[in-house]
Length: 412
Ligand SMILES: Nc1nc2c(ncn2[C@@H]2O[C@H](COP(=O)(O)OP(=O)(O)O)[C@@H](O)[C@H]2O)c(=O)[nH]1
Ligand SMILES: *[C@@H]1O[C@H](CO)[C@@H](O)[C@H](O)[C@H]1NC(C)=O
Ligand SMILES: *[C@@H]1O[C@H](CO)[C@@H](O)[C@H](O)[C@H]1NC(C)=O
Ligand SMILES: *[C@@H]1O[C@H](CO)[C@@H](O)[C@H](O)[C@H]1NC(C)=O
Ligand SMILES: *[C@@H]1O[C@H](CO)[C@@H](O)[C@H](O)[C@H]1NC(C)=O
Ligand SMILES: *[C@@H]1O[C@H](CO)[C@@H](O)[C@H](O)[C@H]1NC(C)=O
Ligand SMILES: *[C@@H]1O[C@H](CO)[C@@H](O)[C@H](O)[C@H]1NC(C)=O
Ligand SMILES: *[C@@H]1O[C@H](CO)[C@@H](O)[C@H](O)[C@H]1NC(C)=O
Ligand SMILES: *[C@@H]1O[C@H](CO)[C@@H](O)[C@H](O)[C@H]1NC(C)=O
Ligand SMILES: [Mg+2]
Image 1 (cartoon, rainbow, N blue to C red):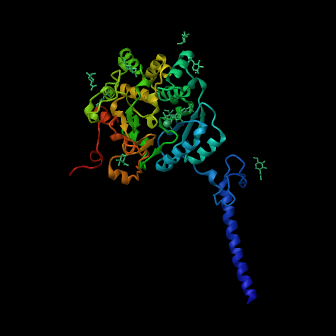
Image 2 (cartoon, rainbow, N blue to C red):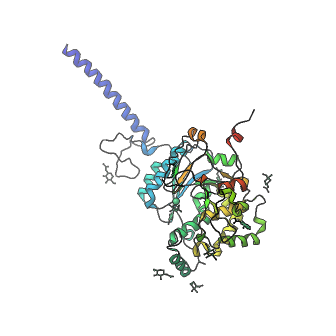
Image 3 (cartoon, rainbow, N blue to C red):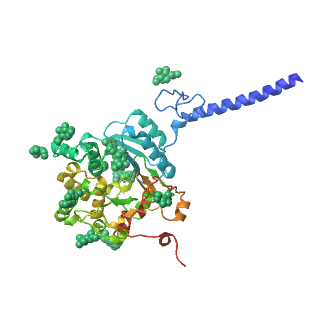
């Protein structure tokens, strides 16, 4: 009897070890397809960091990053090493809601080299390929015609009164995002970009490829939030734009949306007076921390004529012109308004504003999560119903407003 037991246990153990060995052997070969067995050394770059009781699959670094989406497109994030945690949080949200189904690449831009920790963690967070690009100093620092003393004076003067007014780096950033991001070498490889910032959140499942949507619907630019700019950041922007329009009337698109920038009807915001403005610019702009756009528009001669004109006027440095009003004014002047798309079904949060689709059905269908981010009146619901939202102005003077019924259903 004992002998039989020993034999049975022996056989079972042999089967067990055979199975374990085979399985282990297989995973060892699958992680290093064309070389000798993979030896994990957690102190080396790109190797998994195993906790003592970890069941982490050791093949993790070898995930398949092959692009699935068919568009010539990339995510792009300008950021700094110390913003890593916020960058990962935005990536996590966008990957889960959209990109893991498409694996578009990520391009990270910085005027200082990214450190190893930033590179490793963002690479692991991305579903697709990642690229880390150093912005050349000449694309970042103030151009040579800028008088540094005059700049310093304005920084000193604006420190208290103007939002981000005291930071030279913020002016470099706005100047870069206005005239240089699309010229970066890596981005020359793409037609489309999706701008992402640290610490933002996407509230709904996308359920489609926004790049493909823009291309097939003949759109060139998409935004979510549109709001009023602080006038003291741009005291002379509009007069510069007016002289540009006088000098280059041939560049103004026949189907422009300049009226969106100049309408002051109070009926569009429940008869509440707009912020007072010294110019006929009503301060409306697309919030550029979210953008999906076509790089060829920004690379066009029209846009660059516009940008260079503003750059010479000096307001990126002697004032604190933001890239949001600059992009928006360029789009409104130079682009067919029907090529600008309002993404009303994505949902987006960048402090302090939340935007969520208004349709209950859509919110449920797309698994939106619209809980208030800030528990302060006027900030705890979608910004589109804030009286100072410019969306009603876009509906009236931009590309109009369509309803789900118009798109999805035929009324019998
Ligand atoms: N590399 C780099 N990125 C910056 C700098 N300043 C701002 N950014 C990035 O520019 C974007 C806008 O900056 P942020 O601080 O979010 O400004 P806000 O959105 O206007 O409040 C974010 O993606 C930042 O990571 C900078 O000096 N260097
Ligand atoms: C792991 O890599 C480090 C270099 O980072 C090296 O010093 C060490 O000997 C390696 N350990 C093993 C077990 O190979
Ligand atoms: C630069 O600006 C300062 C202060 O506004 C001014 O005094 C100086 O003349 C300017 N320099 C040049 C070369 O224009
Ligand atoms: C700006 O302020 C700093 C600190 O108060 C001062 O040292 C500097 O001289 C000021 N620069 C100009 C150009 O006014
Ligand atoms: C993607 O777009 C870039 C920029 O327009 C272009 O140079 C490149 O050939 C395109 N790639 C493909 C595969 O179409
Ligand atoms: C608008 O004009 C008033 C009166 O001239 C002036 O006090 C104010 O500073 C101006 N505001 C801006 C943002 O330029
Ligand atoms: C302006 O828009 C109309 C209507 O969409 C279109 O038919 C026309 O071709 C556009 N004009 C130009 C110059 O693109
Ligand atoms: C709107 O603009 C027109 C023309 O620029 C001006 O006459 C009118 O007073 C403005 N209305 C308001 C409410 O600001
Ligand atoms: C937002 O805040 C106001 C005032 O505190 C409150 O009445 C309202 O119910 C809040 N809305 C949400 C969605 O929490
Ligand atoms: Mg931001």
